Amino acid sequence: MTDAPLLAKLRDLIQANGPMSVAEYMTHCLSDPAHGYYATRDPFGVAGDFITAPEISQMFGEIVGAWLIDVWQRLGAPDPVNLVELGPGRGTLMSDILRVARLAPDFEQAVSIHLVETSPVLRGRQQDVLKAAGAEAHWHDAFNQVPPGPALVIANEFFDALPIRQFVRLDIWRERAVGLDTRSRLAFGVGPGVLDDGPEAPQGSILEICPAAAAIMTEIATRVAHENGAALIIDYGHAQSGPGETLQALCGQSFSDPLDRPGESDLTAHVDFAALARAALDAGAAPHGPMPQGEFLNALGLVERAERLSAGAASEERDAIRAAVNRLSAAEEMGTLFKVLAVTPRGIVPPPFM
Image (tube, helix red, strand yellow):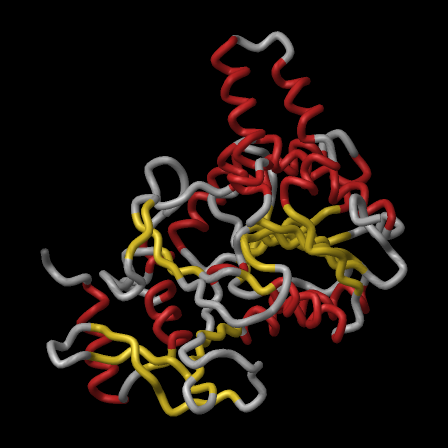
């Protein structure tokens, strides 16, 4: 088997500069312009490496759309309002949201659509989908490029792909790094970085932090607190901060070694929802949750929506709808591991966090 194209570049960088942090390694693997995972492919769907909730069923996007309309009204129905999605995938979620928006003409007229996407391949997919939906949208490389003003922000499986730093508990918390072994293969080791304020933990424990996630949440929450708006974060992760290694690689819908064939596998880590909530609170906004995805969807009518879609449907279609409900909400599927965090101005409590 030939080496992954990115591997030679990483070897050269490590030989020239020494071992790189896990965060730097993830950035190269996911975002390298020539060989990065997201820069070179569409990873979504049955033929890709993973399937996200919007691709499982239209019900997911419809519920998110209804939530956005309800919260927009609770915020005083700001007009205009930026409707922003971070990491929009194929554009499926936004398309489903806009279909629901047509049932609320005032909301539909008020929104200006903004998609934060760096992948040229995925931008092309999103443009095709939204054009078919009759929607005009604006693309940005980062959230801070979205025009000022009230904003409704959706981030579904966005934060899990942000680069993390890992620290291993030895005599102190020392930063984990990616270097080369004696056969010039990628290998984990320890770099020069240290963490001064890490928690107590047994020797050999791994601690993950995501400065990029905290920075982006601070930007979002600051906008929400000072310019009006709300954010909905949906991802897999843990409700409390603490040691534990969650870095993983996914290729062909199967787990693989994160150091194997860099640039050809999706690298992710579980989202620290407690850290996101702290960042939102420190920025002056009000975090709500996290709540398990299954609880969130069921409270907002997932089962009832499924029953309406099933009415008059053929037997195979009813089975598919039932399977989608199970995958989205069952504890052994996405219902518990995936969580939902909402962010609003202080004094606003969105459903179903009441």
